[in-house]
Length: 80
Image 1: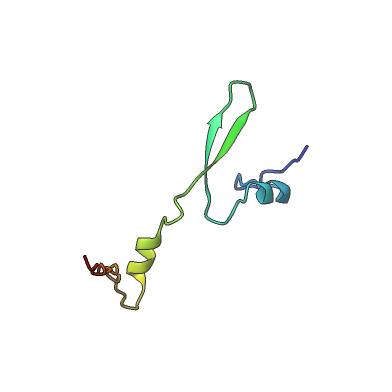
Image 2: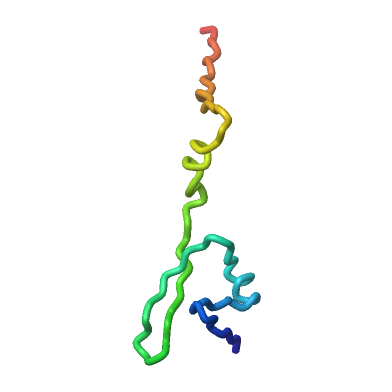
C-alpha cells in the first residue's frame, strides 16, 4: 500500500510509482469524485488532446509562420 501526507496547504504528492505508471506530467489535470464509502476519494486523470494548446503556442510565437498549401499532383496523360 502506498501512502502520502497532506501538507499545510492541503497538497498531496503522488508516489513516484503511481506517477510513472500513469504517466503523470506537470500540468496534467485531475478530477476528484467522492466515493460511496466514507473516506473514499476517487482521483481520475483527465486526458488531453495531443494538440491541445498548439494554436495558442503558435499565435504567441514571435516568429511569423505560414501553413503551406497541400501539394496537388497533376495526373499523367494516358495515350489511348
